[in-house]
Length: 233
Image (cartoon, rainbow, N blue to C red; front, side):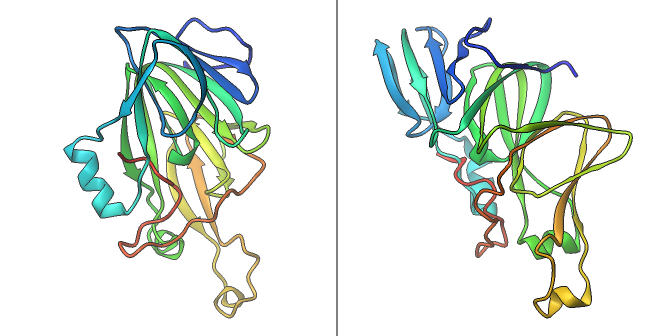
């Protein structure tokens, strides 16, 4: 695992933890960061905020999936403090690699990181879940994500790990993600366990799991799920 997690108040990049629930971004004039719209709680200096464009490819995916992650571009120079509903914040350093997870967990990332939308495999399980989508972040730089509570970092391999799709915050590059189902006759008549669809992660790596199922996935008119609440501009 090349990617590293930061749990203190200092780091080598522009993103660091002011405290466990507050992100500090030191934004230079020549290097902007991307952040979730509405996440700024305070700033000082000459920071500026503008609507971030998604690009034609991601706008097309927005129409196809019904998902949206609203991002803003933050210019400096200045110190900007970011948060999301007092959730725990975690900073990950990527070294020319990728991580994948729920778009609602993405708080901010540096300009060296690119992102895209992927759909989970799963056949019948995907149909039951209404179709679940996630965001892939790739490149060299820092990514800040949030979790609803203090999360658990689980190693994956040699056996798969199964998670509630809404509890999986982020997982490492190289893992195979798919939807797994355990549907029985009882499920079809309303007597199931409520855990019929899970996220299956196999391979070798890690997954960050929050102690909360968050907002349940919702099916949209396009057949898309609601896991990626809002990753579009």
